[in-house]
Picture (spheres, rainbow, N blue to C red):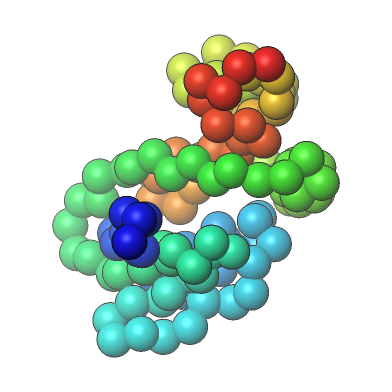
Length: 127
């Protein structure tokens, strides 16, 4: 058996709004209820399990490996929604795309301070 990530819990103020926001940008089906979670299924069978919390939310970073076609669709959704994105994690290159490892990548602000990223090639894969 190989070791794979199955799910991660994403702490947010409103699990349905947050899962809808991320799902819409990524072009995924609506999240479903699973216990206290809004479960957003990814194409590789892993899921982001959004959970409501009280108090401070500590933003995390989530990176998604996507195809070139999906990258264009996601970038289009960000543009259409008037959202900002950056080529770098330091927010020094707004509205730009990075070309690391021979692919493309970008970052955007997700719900509740989470930092989201799409890449078309894994880091370190060359190019």
